[in-house]
Image (cartoon, rainbow over all chains, first blue to last red; front, side, top):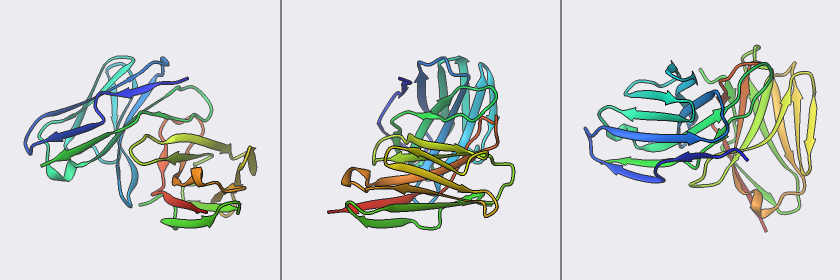
Length: 114
Length: 112
């Protein structure tokens, strides 16, 4: 079974703090993704990575950065947390090649910025 | 611009009846479609998928139908069970593409 783990289930941070969210997958997947989920807005892609040290912006990258130094690990960084970044953050991974591929999700991190 | 739309935010169905969740898309490049189920405080789990070469795919109680000309897909759950109560997301991608575009979700409540 694919396993995607996230470093924290719940996190509370103050405005202006630097926040690190970590994600690890154990299936040797090439692709990794960070989403945020907000009520009525569905899942919105923040960043994704298709290889080590490679990254691409998603639909809402502002205020975020990412790091992928090892294939199994993908980190999301909030440089200076703001209250509008309070959300559920979801990490996912998938294989790549030709065809259609499902993404496998971690359990999520509920981040509250006060 | 919402390329994948789930126009019903919520749906309530009696146990044992059929649940039908709908999804529309606008991007003609999409040819692979997926449904995910999400419980509160958990990550989404993959449910079923369909490629554009098919118009139907079944997996147990779950069937997905694709109408390419109408750019519409639907998920049928028969019979519905209380454990099916969750938020369901529709997603789409171009074939071979890594990115998925998600809809806004439909909350299904299966009542006794």
